[in-house]
Length: 334
Length: 107
Image 1 (cartoon, each protein chain N blue to C red):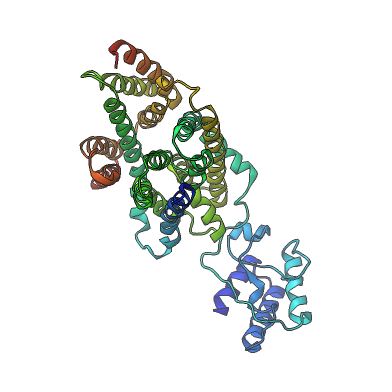
Image 2 (image 1 turned 45 degrees about the vertical axis):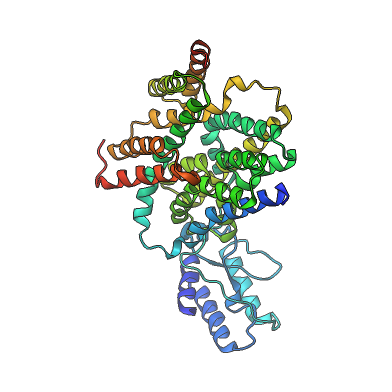
């Protein structure tokens, strides 16, 4: 375990001789330390956020002193390690955290990239703002506490699942039916999550936990587009999160306004129809490949045919059928 | 059972749906295939949700012509999006079409 970790450290620090010697002392000390290693051993190898230029460049784990003085650069980090090896008194063992590939920590919350994500999702915000308004109106009219209606937003973060949950609670359905229906509507998120997880492999767990909470159709679409452009992974992650936070803020605000305005907005406006229109527009505005055309055509047909499938499974069936039909085509043709 | 408890329970399991595949993806070897599938999940999902919305609107209306306004509105929206390259234009063109035809058809 120590040798790969040492290689990572040397790589991150440009493999200078002084650092190499310190690294040898560091890991040799840990190996010999046995039952009571000092924090200057493997424990100093942390996977937490690091803003060191080398770490940003290489994307591997770096040495962070568990001292009170944060490293201000490569040499500073090296000095911190050296001080810990020689001066730090023995403490209980802490586990060495070495991950491969090491988490991309720096830049995950980069404001410029997040602002870029917020701009990218801006066209969606109009449609989903109106949709959030409609969901809020449904919650406001239902026979459940207004706060409970609004809580479906942060809890489920999916318009379809929220409307279904509110309707069923209003109709007095049992808890199992409500939860199962919300899950059936949200089944597609499993596919989104699996696809995004491949891109999020290098992120810390806290970031994945946060990103997964706001994973829904628009954030997946905007994030997917940015990830396909390539470039700095951390910037792409921040782009996704910026888009998600913008959508979340809009959605929850619109839902709250909808609850407060329930009964004042005429239902004849059919604002809930904004979403089918917007999604149809999203499909139509891009030329797409033969495979993607096959995906949406098959999904449309199956969605209509399977509309009456019990348990709200028609939607999932349609998505699976459309995706499978597209995958049959081996090469994308224009 | 309180509505709050049911909503929180639904939210917790829904969150597990979102998180589990992403957390377990390290154990999946065929990432390339997943990535390729993700390309088509988006148009398939959008189409399925849009079709479901049109169907729901058609079923909510009364009379034999109930399906006409939402269908025509979606077709107008698609034409607007193709012409302008903007999804907002689709909404701007489709929604008034729905209102107008709903009023004319009396559905």
